[in-house]
Image 1: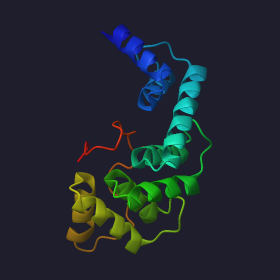
Image 2 (image 1 turned 90 degrees about the vertical axis):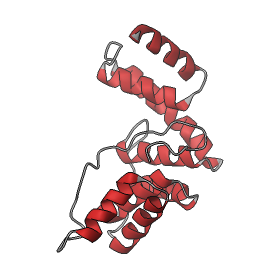
Image 3 (image 1 turned 45 degrees about the horizontal axis):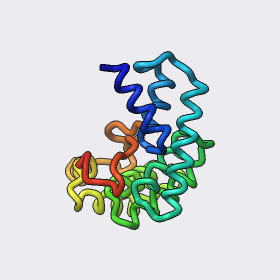
Length: 173
């Protein structure tokens, strides 16, 4: 029941669940299950970003990754690619596979940093070693295609998903 889903998500968001806040922002931004309302969408995105920021400062890798996503795609905050890369780095150093992969993307494409194929490779390997399938695919393409130019953009690098779960579970592997 879509109305019940919106109601329950609204309650969770009002109680401070950051991922519910992001979901409501998305629903209001795109009119999914609710009337399109960009002001409400922005409110929920800003609220979620503040929540991510508080948790990120406490060292929560999932929140650090999500805050990086916020800065990279101007979700609730002003776009800042350098800050996005810094938050990805904080989460990646803790071994968070999604942040390691996204950091590889940053170094490969020069998002918030200078392009550096060696560092991109390092972070793709770190994510792949944890079983993250996108990193494994990326490495397979980079290393397995004769004559591949490392910097060639391959695959879908659209906005990475926000991550649910308090400690950044192993979903999406």
